[in-house]
Image 1 (cartoon, rainbow, N blue to C red):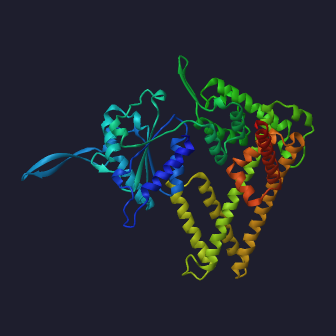
Image 2 (cartoon, helix red, strand yellow):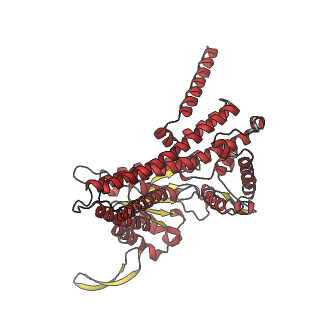
Image 3 (cartoon, helix red, strand yellow):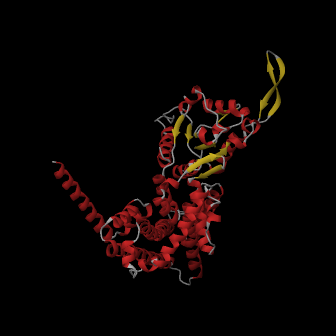
Amino acid sequence: MNIQQAKQEIINTIKAYREKDEMGNYLIPVQKQRPILLIGPPGIGKTAIMEQVAEELSVNLVSYTITHHTRQSAIGLPFISKKEYGGKETSVTEYTMSEIIASVYDKINQTGVKEGILFLDEINCVSETLVPTMLQFLQYKTFGAHKVPDGFIIVTAGNPPQYNKAVRDFDIVTLDRVKRIDIEEDLEAFKSYADINGIHGSILAYLDIHKDNFYGIKNDIQGKRFVTARGWEDLSQLIRAYEKLGIEVDEKVTSQYLQEPEVARDFAMYYALYHKYEDVYNVDEILEGSVPAERDKLRKAPFDEKLSIINLLIDRLNQEFKAYDGEFGVQKKLQKEITDIVKGTVFAEESSIYKRLQLRIKEMRAEYEQKAGEHLMDKSSEITLKKEIQALENLERKLASSETEDNKDIIKAWFSEREFTRRESAGNTGKHLSNCFSFLQQIYGEEQEMVLFLTRLDSGHYSLNFIQNEGSEEYYKYNKLLLLRDRRKEIVAQVLEV
C-alpha cells in the first residue's frame, strides 16, 4: 500500500486497540494488541505519518531511532540488590528502567495523557547485541524487566534488505506476533500530501512530466545515488526560502537534496524554465484578468510547456486557498472564544468581560507553550493557535485603551472588521480563480488543458474547501460540461459496439 493508505491503517488499528467495552476493558486485550511493523523504502515518510497520526488522534508520541541505542540504554543499567531465597540473603543483578520506557512515563507526566504511540525506527537494523532484546520487545512489549504502559501502542519501522545491508530478517515466530504493513513509494500519494503541505509548484510540475524521477535508489561502482520523497519535500522548503531571499536555485543547490546527478541537473534546468514561463506569460496578470498577447504561442506550445503554465496557476491559487483556509479556521475559533467570554461560559466567577479575556489569553499561552514544547501540534495547528492568541491580545489592547465601558460593542466592531477583511480577501481569491477559467477558455477552450486544471482543483484539499465554502460558477459550469461530454462519448462508444 502507499504511505497515505498505511497512515489510515495505523489510525484504524490504534482506534481498535483503544476501544473499550462497557466494563472499561480493552476490546482487544493488551497482550493481543500486536505491534505494528512498517516495512518500506527510506525517505517515503514513515516517520512523518507517525507525527500526523499522533496529532490527529490527540495522543502522545515517543519516537526513537533504535540503531542509536546500546543494549544498556535499551534495557537499563545493571545494579546489585539483596534478596532472600530459602531463608538466605543473596546478591542478585537487577536493571534500572530502560531509557525508552522512562521516556514514555515522562511524556505521560508532561502531558497528562495516558495513551500514545511508541515509535521505534530502523527496528531491523539493530546491532547483534540488541537482537535478542528487540525480539523480546516485539513478543512481550518489555525492555528488560520493564513493560510498555498499557494504552501505548507500539509502532516500528524498517527498510527492506535491498536498501540496507545491515537489515536482519526476523524469524517466523517474531513475524507471527506483529501486524506487518508493507509500504511502497507512490507519486499520487505524495501529490496528495504535497497539496496540503505546500510543496513547491515547480516540483509538482516536474514530477507530472518526469514521473520516473520521483523516487529511486541505486548502488553501483559510482557509489550510492538516490532521490526520495523526503528529498523533494526538503528541497521545496529550501526553494521557498531562497525565493524569498532572492537567492538563485541552480544545480549546485538541487544536487544537495537530489543525490542522483542526472535528476538534480534535469530539475535545475526545469526550475529555470518554470520561472521563465512565469515571466514570459506573466502569471500575475492572468490572475488579474489579462490574457497574454502571445495567444498563438500558448496554443501551439508543447504539452510540457502547457502543463507548466497550468501548474504555475494552480501553485499561485493554492497559496491563496491555503491562506483562506487558515484565516477561516482562525476566525471560526475566535467567534467561539469571544462568545464564551462574553456569555461567561469560561471563567464564570469573573463578572468582567475584560478580566475573562485576560484569563483566557493566559490559559491559551500556557497551552501553546506546552504543546509547542512537547511537539504535540503540527505546523498548521501551531500557526492557527498563535494567530488566535495574537488576535485576542489585539482585542485586549483595544478594550484597555477604550474610554467606554460597553465592551460588547467594541468586541462586535473588532470582530466585524476582521470579518470584512477576510471576506474581501476571499473575494479576491474567487476573482483570481474565475480569471484562470476565463484564460483557459479563451486559449484552449474545453480541451485537455481545462480537464487538467479541473483535475488539479478536484484533487486539492484547500481548493475544494474554498469552492465548497465560497462557491465558483465557472467551476460548476465547466465541471458539468466536461462530465456531459464524457457521458456522450461513453454512449456513442456503447452504440458503436452494438
